[in-house]
Image 1: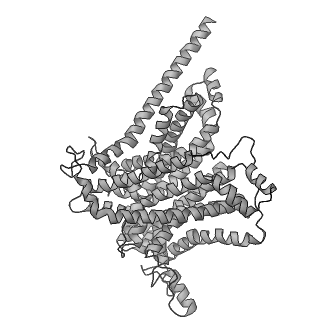
Image 2: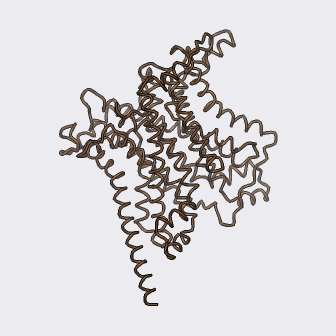
Image 3: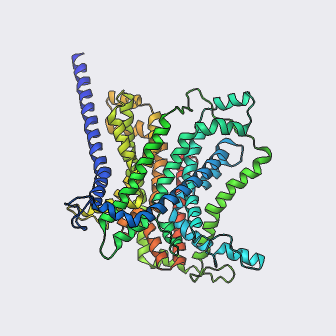
Length: 575
């Protein structure tokens, strides 16, 4: 018995030491990946010495006054983010209610089609609507003009409303996913009680469902607002002929000017991060004022509302979004990619496959961009999920052991911090961090991989944390007690329990890596091209046909990834 007790004590001590060492290593890794770029961004913003010094050595407040000329650009970013977030949240919420709470047919297929515009990315959407919505020769306007025998301008994508529309189309799937998941899992007890008391479906939705969904709605609104503040591709492409410019464009211009102005660019970045942080704090305070517990152990999923004569209208809303967000953009890109000139035409087309052969076989830069993006997608997906799972397990263990103190909350806050940082701004901060390292990393795929891992860590953590909280850790502990190694227990018990969430998170990171532009445009170099910046550079050089061909390839790769996941997981992707 003494020997057994001694073995048990040694095992417990070894396990405690391993956990403490692993937790410390996780803390150091998060501080390095998340804290270091933010600290350097702050230091650069208050640099009053050599503007090109990395890291700076002289500090002051004089750069605050340099924000004056950029206030108009920041105001435009806020105005764009407000409009896009409101429109996307309304559209996403309506689509989520129709799919999750009504009797519309084909909900799994509709869900997949609704989320497609997000992994397609803003660069693809901007290129597509540049083809569709040009005031004079856009395909939509030309088609209507031919139909009515006189010039018709139904949409002008090269306008401020056009920019808002395209950004909202891309952002709507995120709002849909956040709200639909909460609607699907919400306990229906209160709604059923209201129905018993004579409340109709519309009244119940307005008075019961919507107030209870406030956390999800505000979360979607906040996430979309912050991501829209970092909009770069759409304003740059559709707003280049306007006087409407946003803060990320100003940062990009300051960085790429003949004499780079790092402190001014950093100060704009700090201003955007502060705005995001204040919004996060305000939303959290609003949500803490009351309880929104709507998922219970004995709860029942909500009954689906029978739409009756309103079903055609609901389907029109869903199919209308799919038509604007998926069908029209893909049709426009394929049409432009198959034409011999950059003047895309539906009246006198000249068809060719040359653009695809050039992109896939002739031009080495696009081939390298495709291969690099695939490597980044797989690397970000695998490493990002492992990191997010490690954080989620560490935080969850602390909570279950009754140590829901500051340590777990601070780790979670640090993990979620990149959510408040615009992508291009974080790419700039990561660039400065890489340039300050004693070894060469700039211009490599590794630098982009690190930035993607940090940028997408909050989404990966959100996806995995829910599954981790539902998994019973006693099974792994029992295996360890019976003599199984940590690797064996993890491989045979933990990973199978967490597989669904890890697969979903990995595919989400893969899709986001394929379409990210903001951070990649700051970090990619001639030897490390990736799809987002390559698409942007192609468009900047006037090759809309080549842009379209490359965009179609990108969409095809994302589509193949989703199909593979569907086959592997045996169900539609549920992010």
